[in-house]
Image 1 (tube, rainbow, N blue to C red):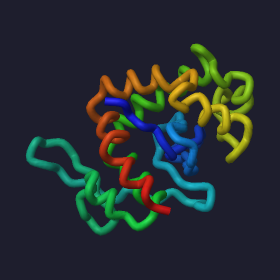
Image 2 (image 1 turned 180 degrees about the vertical axis):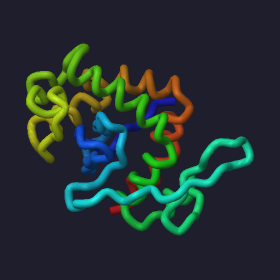
Image 3 (image 1 turned 135 degrees about the vertical axis):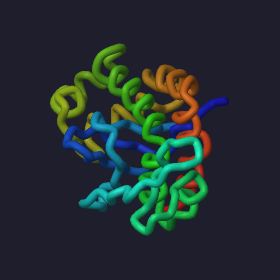
Image 4 (image 1 turned 60 degrees about the horizontal axis):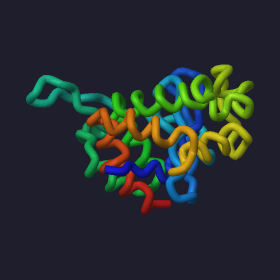
Length: 179
C-alpha cells in the first residue's frame, strides 16, 4: 500500500505542544513534523486546541476524547468541519504513528541524507520553528514528494507501524477534501 502524504504539511517546531500545519496542493508533497509530537495548527491559527479529556476502552487503553467528552476516532475526525480540525483530530487519535513519521522525517531532513540540512540549519535542525512558506518548509515539502529524498524512508517507517499507516492511510485522506 502506497501512503500518500498529500497536502498535510506539519512544520517543525520546538516549543512544547506547538506545531503548525499548512495545506499543500502539490500531489504527494507531505507532512513535515513537530519535534515535540504536538498537535498541528494552520498558519491562520494562533492557538492549539486542547485534545480534551480521555476515556478508557475495553482493552484498558485510553481513547482520546474532545472537550465535550466524545471519543475521537477516524470517523469523528472525518466529520470535523475544517481541514485543520480534521488533521488535528487525526494527530490526537494516532500519536504513536505521528511520532514514527516525525522521527524518520527529522532524521532525513537534518542527519541522513540531510535533505534539508542547509535550508533548515537555523530552524528545524537547530530545534527552532520553521517559517511558513520559507526555504526550510519548502524543502521539507519537496523532500516528501513521491520522488523526494525523504519520501521512501518515511513511507517505509510509516508502513511498518500500524498507527502511522492508519494516520496517513485512513484518517488524513478525508481531511484533504475539506478547506
